[in-house]
Amino acid sequence: MMIDTLAADRVSQLLSRLDVPGPRYNSYPTADRFADTFDAASYRRALQQRAGDTVVGVAAPLSIYVHIPFCESICCHCGRNKVVTHQHERTVEYLPALQHEIDLHVAVLGRGPPLTQLHLGGGSPTFLDDEELDQLVAAVRLAFHIAPDAELSIKVDPRTVDANRLRHLAALGFNRLSFSVEDFDPEVQKAVNCEQSYEAVEALMRVARETGFESIHADLVYGLPRQTPVTFSHTIAQIGALRPDRIALHAYAPLPQRFKPQRRISAHELPAAGERVHMLRAAISGLQGLGYTHIGMDCFALSGDPLEVAKREGRLHRNFQGYSTQADGDLIGLGVSAIGKIGRCYNQNDKKLSSYYDAIGQSRFATVRGLELSDDDLLRREMIMALMCQGRVDFDAIERAYPVRVHECFASEMERLRTLQAEGLVDLEPSGIQVTPLGWYFVRAIVMVFDSHLAPEARRDPARQGYPRVV
Image (cartoon, rainbow, N blue to C red; front, side, top):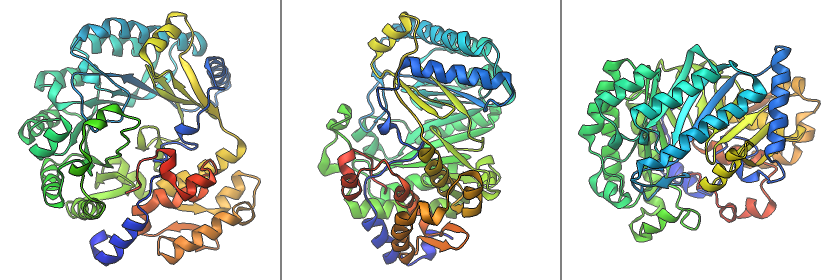
């Protein structure tokens, strides 16, 4: 169902009422629940457990995320862990550290475990020059066996690449590109210090298609300074003309107390709550009208895209990179601040570059925080991810996998869900919980019901936790 087939005033009312801060649930429990009691030794034990599982043939699929923190300029709205510099020699120390970190993993896991996904993010991975990218990819290929059908993706800053660089990425084996677009309006771009023309992005996407990349993604952000419903609708039309295979539609999360560059943004230039809600409703309607399927939360894909097929066939998954076609597996995070998942453990590297270098220089993992999931965490993660990905929880399936009676175990949660059912967001059935077409636009608010790590005061006032807003 398209959102514009619903009563506009009803949608706006719900969007406004449910526009509260909340986790994005790329994981459960979420990263803010990680603790420093999970350290480098804890991470090593998790890797050793995986190595043992591999021997007996039960190890989960393996992916790698590499964080490249460097950027040439500050995008004022950005909330990522980054180092802004024009000094490209900064990579001279970083790449050997990544190589050493890879070697630490090989020492535990052995050489050649199969890899189904590789993603380079940042920062800006295209801060690295061609030779440096060659060096990094070669190090990964030497340590791991990249499966023939593996997804190799890289985040691309359109301001730092040209046609030759895109062709070089393809030659390295990358088959997926993700372009940081945000907005095409020149005034909005100036306000966030991220200026790139529509024509430049269009030319790069055309070259990417001619080069044979399997999938092209584009990131958009609404709620930015100087944005209006009119200007953003124009951006939606422009991105529709470019026809990327997938679109991520993120809400700008102003957290200036946490991210210093955001303090450069004038609060009076931000769109009002009502305008932001209007932008979201119009963007969802506009993208669906252009042939995109709303995969869930902030993700859209064209018909026939593997994500759209996985959603339609009930095979959708979610991980630290967002929605995925691949089943729940293990993730090795390499680089400063990188997050990983091994077995029932989450881990994160040190966020400070100097501390990351110190740890790797001493031949120890840079893990400084993480979490080993309890049985209750695993159960709730199953419930939350089923709702986030499939829009449905099947009680029989849960009770076959876990020693619980759902209605007894989640009695208080069911009471809260009845309120959402009265709003038309979920259907509570004897056999399970079904997210309604309207409920898909509020799925984060729905799954928050099952988050036992949200303290009571955070449930009353989620902003105290520093989460981005749901809408």
